Image 1 (cartoon, helix red, strand yellow):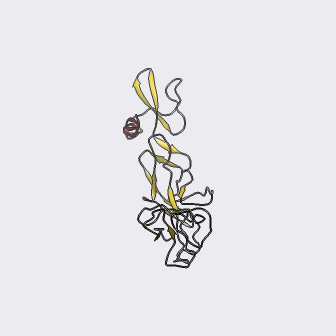
Image 2 (cartoon, rainbow, N blue to C red):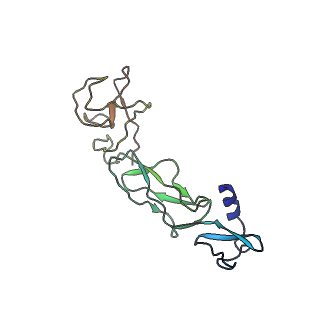
Image 3 (cartoon, rainbow, N blue to C red):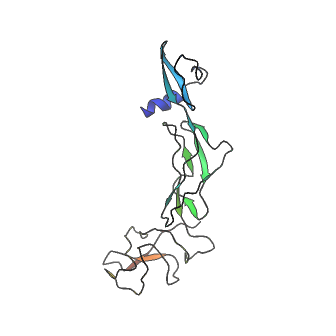
Length: 188
């Protein structure tokens, strides 16, 4: 069904009856009429109408719902399949692509951002994100646990940190054969 909507959205808008022209068949804002016979019409989503949703922030310890800034004057409207560039909030970087697409259901994709290490803090001494996986994909051991590795720290959770001012945030791993490992956290 969504493929049909995408294909129908490519129909020349001049060929589709305008909103409200067909009797008893006004379409909601952002949709268009597509006639199937003389007495029947279907409302098809052809545009995204509304704001881009707040970004999903990976590895964030704060429950924050910032908005992203869009790199275009017409931020809230777009044709199905059309993309808009976005900029993540300060202290985060984009995960994957730096744009969102207007989907066939009339909604914008959710931007994805990730907490990062500030360029003014290259060692990540002040990193407060919630990433808990090492560079090679190992799960971090909780700082308040002494199993499988004993250590002198007693912070809570199992987030990557840099308590000893090493070169970057790291953690003890849950792998009995790997005591600790650096974490891969992007720089802002």
